[in-house]
Image (cartoon, rainbow, N blue to C red; front, top):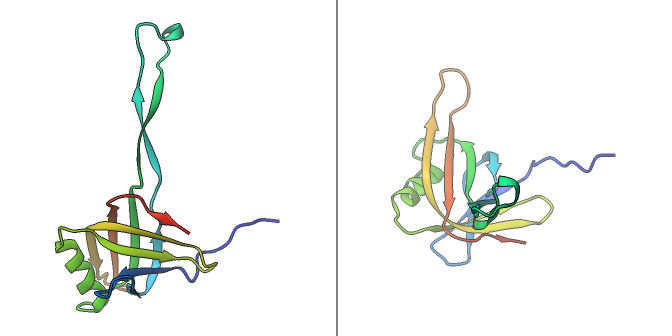
Length: 137
């Protein structure tokens, strides 16, 4: 039997003006959790065995998170995301999963893309570049 679960019920939150207090950010239909990547550093030398490249571990990067929500022009979610995009300081966000797990992070909003297709719903996609290490719990 599979251990797969769906993501229905996942919530994306933004810290309010009251530190430590979070509020839902729009009505999400797509949430991308921060990606975990690692650089590698080429450590090849003239003495590398059999002329094969050698590598050592480099810096880790927790990449970006993403959010797709229903777009309401002039709505709170758009206003908050635009303010965060204008802010030169990172903002605190949290993703809550239906099983009670969460990931919290501080990030810069790097992209806010609203769309209004002729057929279909209005959507907004936002990207968040993590400013440091996320906390998984």
